[in-house]
Amino acid sequence: EAMPRRSSNIAASWEALKAEAARCTRCKLYKCATQTVFGEGSLDPTILFVGEQPGDQEDLAGHPFVGPAGQLFDAALQEAGIDRSTTYVTNAVKHFKFVQRGKRRVHSKPDAGEIEACRWWIEQERGLIKPPLTVALGATAARSLIGKIVTISKVRDEPLTLADGSECWITVHPSFLLRLPDEEARLSERARFVDDLKRVRKRAT
Ligand code: URA
Figure 1 (tube, rainbow, N blue to C red):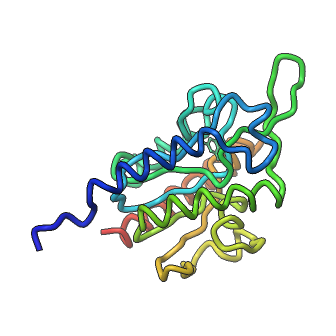
Figure 2 (figure 1 turned 120 degrees about the vertical axis):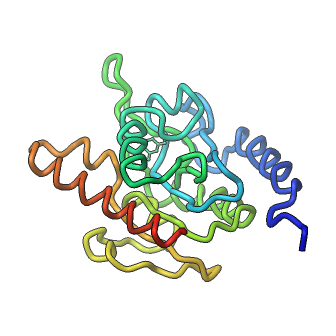
Figure 3 (figure 1 turned 90 degrees about the vertical axis):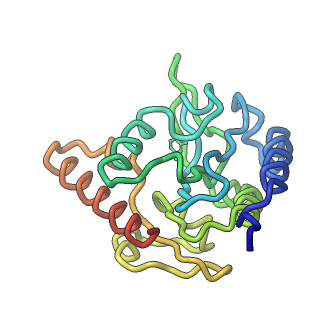
């Protein structure tokens, strides 16, 4: 009974997994990216968040959600009353995929083969961490987690059950909010994203 829910072996296994992922060649994306951006956070989290793939800044920093989308994500988490340090944050695809346009590296969507190849890593992360609650940020994350193409608007309001029996909620990706050209839509969609996070927080406690 005095046993902690998570043994220290989990941390060692996670470190080993991360080191192995740093050498990943399961798809071609490792060739152009700076480094593998592995998941990070609590190994006994309240919530596991899954994004799409690292962006330009994440690729350089080696940490998930630290660029513009990460800043929006952090602010939304704070508004929703979720402490990021109690969560684990990872991506469906762990290398940055981009096209070079002059000096800029422009994000390019991972394809089905890349999502499939990288699924191995998220399954290892989830198997180790066993999160009680998972949140897919956007369609790529949802596709990776449930193996199907979903329409966010249709799956947003009900949780799905993953293979391990745990709950999975699907919401928009923070980058979607950054890309909305209309200010009013941006504000209302952002508020809806925060509402989704609040709902998840209530399920987590
Ligand atoms: N977008 C993502 O999906 N993940 C990141 O880590 C950063 C931006």
